[in-house]
Length: 87
Image (cartoon, rainbow, N blue to C red; front, top):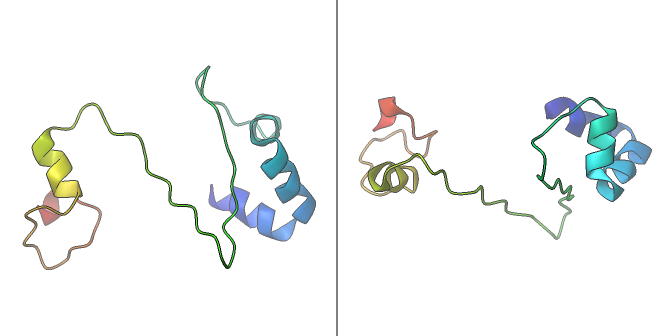
């Protein structure tokens, strides 16, 4: 992902191609993803920030989700990655 972002920053043509046809551009670069998955590419600007909310995991308990959301964490290193060490 970092290499892709760096390439977009260095190559305006590539960035525009990726924004216009993300699935085709990524496929041409050798990326693969599950069938039926739609790929979208957005660009943040000085005045627009896109907040991406990942899909809710199906294998986490309500307690685990509460920990990730910051509920009940008394550990001084918060915010962190919500790893076991912190909880």
